[in-house]
Every structure is written in C-alpha cells, then in structure tokens.
Image 1 (cartoon, rainbow, N blue to C red):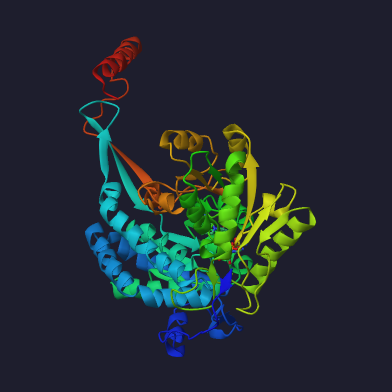
Image 2 (tube, rainbow, N blue to C red):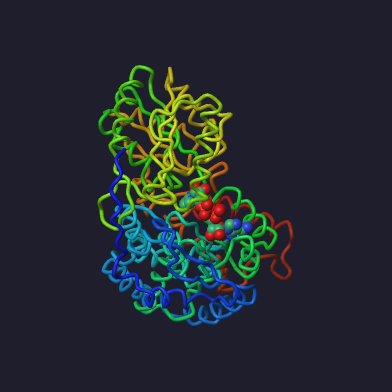
Length: 524
Ligand code: NAD
C-alpha cells in the first residue's frame, strides 16, 4: 500500500460564509452546537445547530402546512421541479463532492459517484411516477354497475433518518420519491455529515421546491429520534441493524409504516471458471470502495480450493498497490474512515481476529501519518464465526478469505449469517452463476460485479432480508410506500342484497349462479 503525501488544500468552495449559510437551515436552538469537523484534519469546519424537541415539533408543523399546498399541486408541476433539480444537481456536482469529502473523509471518486445517485433516482421517478400515482379504475363486485378506484394519497410528513456513509445519497434520494408522491419531509442527517444534504436541499429549493416542505433537524439519534418518529406519518431509516430495531419498535407502537435499510456481512463467491483478473479488480472495489464503508460492500470472499492461492496472491498484491491519501483531487484510491471512533471499531475487529488465530496477509495498521482516521486496506485469512470480523459487520477496509470444496458448501457458508443485504457471484458460465445467486439468502445479488449493478438499477426494488432490513427502496415500491391507498368503491345503482319482497332462497340461488357465471366469463 502506498500513501500519497499530504498536500491538503481545502476546496475554494468551502468558505465559512457558505457553510454558515447551509447550517442556518437547521431547525436548532439547543444551547450547545455540534462541532462539525473536516475528517482529514480534525479541524472544525462549522458549528452545527442542534434540535430540541420543540424545534422538531416546529419543523413538522411547518412541513405539514407546506405539504397541504404541495399535495394539491398537479403532479406535472411537481415533477417539473425535479426536472430542473436534476440539471442543478449535476451542474453543482463538484461542490457537492467537496462537501461530501470534507465531512466524510472519503476519496474523490466515491464522493463524485455519490453525487450521481439523487439525479438517477429523479430520472427514474420522473418517468415512472405518473403511472404509479394516477388513480386506477378497476371493476367492482357487480359488472357494469359497480367500480372500484385505487387512489394513492400521500402519507403526510415523512421522517428520514440517514447515516454518514453516503450522506448526500441517503439524505436526498429517499426523499425524492416521497416528495414526488406529495409528501413533506423532515430529515435527520448524521451530525458528522449534515452539510451535503443541506446543500442538496438548497438546490432543490432553487429548482422550485416550496420553502418549508423539506425540513432539517440535527442531533444525536437517541436524543431526537423519539420526537421525530412520534411526529412522522412514515419513517425511512438507513443505518445499523441495532438502531433499526429501535426505530422499528417505536414506529410499530405508533402504528405507522417504516422502511429499514440496515447492515450486512456481505459474501462474495468466486466460481471455478471466474476470470481471475476481473474478479480481483471487482473484489478490490467491493472490499475497499468508500474505505469499506458501503452497506453492500464485501467482507467475506469464498474461493474454490483450486484457485485460492492464485486469487490470494493477486488480491494481496493489488491491495498493497492501492494509494491512500487525504486529498480533494482524484489522486488517492482510498480515503479515510469517517472518524477516529469508527477507526477504533475497525481496529478492534482486526485485533480480535488476530487474538483468536487469524492471520493478517496485508494491512492491519492505523495510519496517523496520513490523518486521524486512516486505516490500511486489510486482508485476513483464517477468520472464523467466533470472531467479531467473522460474524458482525466491520464496516471498514477489512476482508476475510475462505476456501470451499464444493459450490454447495460455498452457498452454505455465504448463508451462515444473520444478515442478508448483498452478495456477489463471479463466474463465466452465467447460467451457473444465476443458479448460485438464487440460492443465496440476500435481498441483492450481483453477478460479475460486487454491488453497483443491483443498487444502480433503480427500476428494481433493493432492500435487505433477515436482519438486514424491512421493505425496500427503488422500484415501484420505493414510491408507493410513501402513499396510503384509498379504495373508492362506487355503485351506479343499488343492486346488491335482497330486493324488497324477494325470496331469500331465490336470492341465494341467483347470487351463487352469478358467481359461477362471472368466473366463466373471466369477470373478477
Ligand atoms: P447508526 O444506526 O448508528 O446511525 C444511523 C442514523 O441513525 C444516524 O443519523 C444516527 O444519528 C441515527 N440514530 C442513532 N440512534 C438513533 C435512535 N435511537 N433513534 C433515532 N435515530 C438514531 O448507523 P451508522 O453507523 O451511522 O451507519 C452505518 C450503518 O448503516 C452500517 O450498519 C451500514 O451497513 C448501514 N447502512 C445501510 C444501508 C442500506 O441501504 N442497507 C445504507 C447505508 C448504511
């Protein structure tokens, strides 16, 4: 592993005035603000206001007022806002990337790729929303005289709780279908990474989103989570499995819906016939992309015995060739972890594995010489399920390599986890790879790719199974989940039930034979 020399020049866009302007949007009057730092240096960038319960209630009440008018605005007009926002977000992608890098410490490539997610989601739903939101008239129980119409009604105000690993994407992309469907949104970003979603919201307003419709509250999750959930009509949460359980319990008590997108311990299975050079390149991104802080990133790799050594040698050499650095240009292939605290967690997973018998093939060290939260890309051998790194999500640049004797064993090992978020299968025989994919207990499976293909396919729902989540984002459900269904049943003439003076036996006979007739004629 090579590290780039520190040549940190903060981007010109990140002036104190610009950052102050962004945080002014937060509904926050708590006495003590949060010091939001630049991860590469630990320097304070700006004081982030913190929200009290009263602030959160105000955010909801302003959002609720704005939502009434927004929901009454014709869909075509609502979509025009997102057409303009699409252009604005792309035109300002580099400023967004500056903010994402400063607050999360990720490298430039990942920051810029992250800026693409909200425009992709907008493109998809601009096209798809009219079909999903237009009322659908269907037949009623009695042909010709009755009908039923499915009307999609916005939930009201959606609460979104977002993590720090993709702050811009998770802060905005889940809000886009909620807003298109006619809802207002109150988002709670992670304190560490509130700047990029705040800027995204400013751009949405520049595109014509009504003021007040998209509110921001900030604070530590356990402090502000309860008030936020208690005021919301629906909660969209992305974060760890432990927190997801807390959110789900509270939403359940309030009888509101929620979508929980949680953690993973994602496996990659390499089949005998895989192209090894492509597989190694794919694994490099799958394991070390975003410094291992992608919910869908790979933490376990299963290799056939016959190809284990070949993969290990090439993969370790490639990991050692990666450049890591603190820089706002495209130089470093790897950035920082999000914080010194998170680095402690990652280092503890490696130390625990080593103490229990695992071998470090490369990496394993903190790199204070580059910045306060840097950690080397790390490859382990001999990881077992009694180790933290073998059973729980590490969420860092750490992977364990494993051998398998049969494909069946590989599938069993891949499924030997409480999680089920993402999996990856590599092989030239696409049919065989598909067969393996279908046997993995995972909400997403990527063939000959680590993670991006499934996630970037916005037309297909993406979510976790087992302990990795409830519900999904993207696809039709990614928008309709933010609506209630109103079923409007209508009769032109009252024909159901016994007519005055009609004999009950005669009525029953005609009803039952009518049912048979409708079945024969294909009328449901
Ligand atoms: P986290 O659960 O600690 O925090 C996520 C968000 O929840 C933060 O905004 C936090 O402030 C808030 N929060 C924490 N406790 C809360 C509470 N009691 N009530 C309300 N809100 C609370 O997760 P994290 O460490 O910030 O993020 C990393 C995790 O997110 C990883 O497990 C990763 O796999 C997961 N993740 C999942 C997806 C997905 O789509 N499945 C995407 C990104 C990240």
